[in-house]
Image 1 (tube, rainbow, N blue to C red):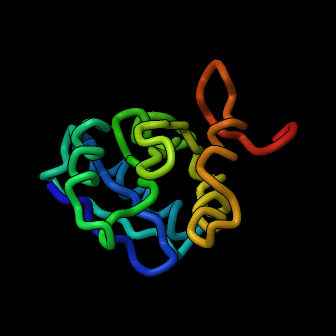
Image 2: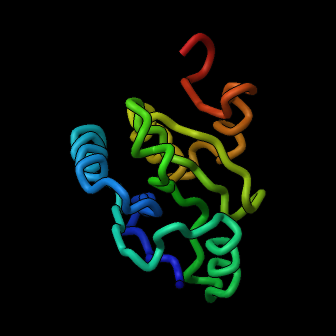
Length: 139
């Protein structure tokens, strides 16, 4: 179950919940309107994939095929009106996560893809109780 490679300067949005195609399509439409650099993958072999399984696959990949982070479209993403993707660090602190409502995705993806900011910058700014990033300051 090797992780797909995102397009150049794009982040990977990986679908891990296949219970609602309409919700997935709504998420894709929101991503399209906010950001054209997302590589979206909807492959049933990732249905229900755990973070641990994804980390194992990433660790088994060749060094030049590894990616730094992945954004998961899981059951929470597809049932919450904010469509909060689960951001997963695969590089610096493997397995560290935070939620990112789709409205913030484009900014985060752009900054991560050009290494302008680190995963930890966003994870550290996530709300402590919900684990959701809602911007810096009063965002």
